[in-house]
Image (tube, rainbow, N blue to C red):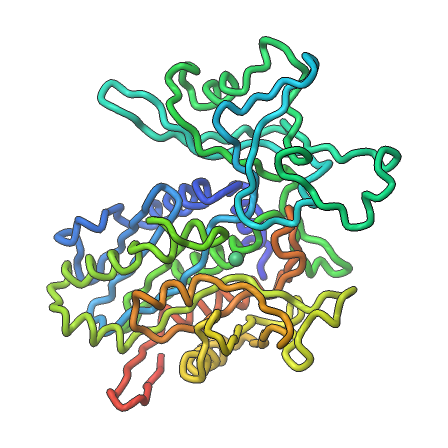
Length: 436
Ligand code: ZN
């Protein structure tokens, strides 16, 4: 991958402490590239040859490029949220008149120990009072602010024997010495450029201050918080911006709330994507039959990171499907349909990777391990299109600092660009013509 794209990715990771910021950063980049911001009620704005961006809740984003003669959709879905700690209302807790700590709750299933003893800070959204109602403001405290300290090994000799953390007792971050000046809300208000009493509500999360970095003997690895799934988000966006759509409407979808089951208006289980597709259809003057026909000529790639073979725990991977860092894009399979991949969708995806000249690998859970699900099988409930689940291989998924391969990011950028630029037609009898 070129140094320039690598630097761009490191910067995107560091500037996106959570979904609100990932969406704001993409929105800015898309606006600079000439995309028009619309809502799903603006179908009269949609034109052949147009470029549009839709957002929901400031935390999900769908960008669309409509070619002159579209016959279907090329959709690539990823997610912008990651496990973190959410700061509760009335956050300050005084400890013996000496310390202030903040009250938090878990968001998603993180590797808890990875959040301890490292500099953390706060980012998210607040709503403020306006003359006519409320307005949202993004807030990011850009300095080392908090720590969740471990207990000394001398005070609990069993700490290394599989300690079970209690989220209410063990994981509250230390904010500072007790001092009238040290008011958490005051700090947030200052950052938002308002008075503390103007803040109505908050959606604030802790984030890891350790920045993204390239490392390894030959600089072959990338480490960062939130690689799951901002690595796929970034690759999808780059592929989307560099593609040349043929007969497919290119759709770059980034959802929120994947880490907590996707069941929200901005999650993959909500109506956001289907609302956008219907809006596009209405705008282009398509009736329901034409839209259904377009779905037949469509493919959705659900891109969410995958588990690489672990260098110390090799036995955790399936015996015959063994993805490695820098080995290529991972196609994910599950007989119980936790992943949507089937012979048709995976076959099409393999041809796309061939066209892009990038390698693929395969992932299946060990048969004695249940494994997680992702976006595809949730979105597929609403959308009658072929879908394939893929991801980039990584280690330490849901750690506060995860590891992935430098080459794999570039592979997905190339595959995404080839996918968005492809022509796909189904003949009605289950045969697909895929070409460029
Ligand atoms: Zn994920």
